[in-house]
Length: 159
Image (cartoon, rainbow, N blue to C red):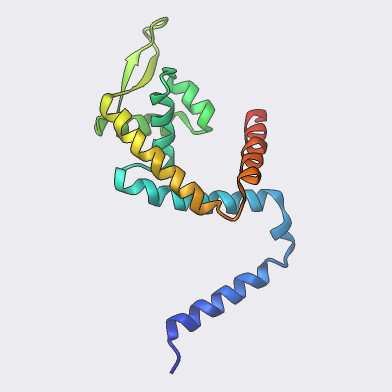
């Protein structure tokens, strides 16, 4: 007797395979969105043991870089609503990974800085994201992955 779960999974995979023959499977926006969804799933799973997700990791990574971004700069760079940035920084502050500090040139503006613990967690998170990237984009060779990053950087910088 056949396993019902594997039979169901096989039918679902066969159905999904059929969809690759549709027009949408050749749309750039769809392909980017699908690759993004796969990447986010892999990286979020890798970051979960550290209590981070892609968005909070991104804020922490920028803070660790020492560039002291304002909340507005983070909002613009990450393409997130300012209220989302506030929530992400609140989470990082609560975890002891980042702090808000007054900007040196304008005390009315807050900048985000990593704490010592934030730098330590970031190091482990960076290793986890790099492993997830290898797993997620393993179908590409090194030069193809480098080219993809160059192209995505160009597209991202243009927007």
